[in-house]
Image (cartoon, rainbow, N blue to C red):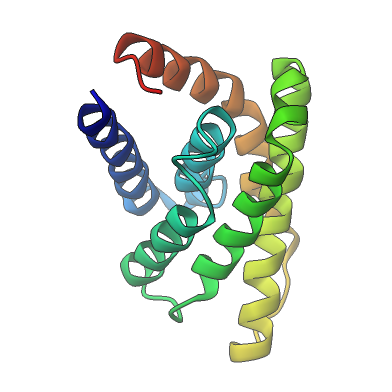
Length: 159
């Protein structure tokens, strides 16, 4: 059962990576949610002993490779974001779904700001307000991500 649940975890993370690199029209692309971050946050809140900072770092590194960004930028931001969620998973679990959405929004904002700061140091990029638009879509999508992944976790009895 343990190996079977590991396959499901990896499969959901791969789907999130694919969704993160899927081409979208430019008008919608600025609102692209951070699928990998959302899936990682769910799994680290639900199973903090199985999905942790190392998992987030590996997913962030894969995201760096897939997006063609400087290696380690997304990995560091993802690891920091997941660390905060793992360190507070018991508190986050006790909040309602809408309160969790706001917490996920704060974590997503932190993720984007860390990515921006690292890119600012390394590439001298300029901050634009639309850089934080994905935070809004993460807040809106969190309840559905939570409910879908909880159903998957219960259906496949992932522990």
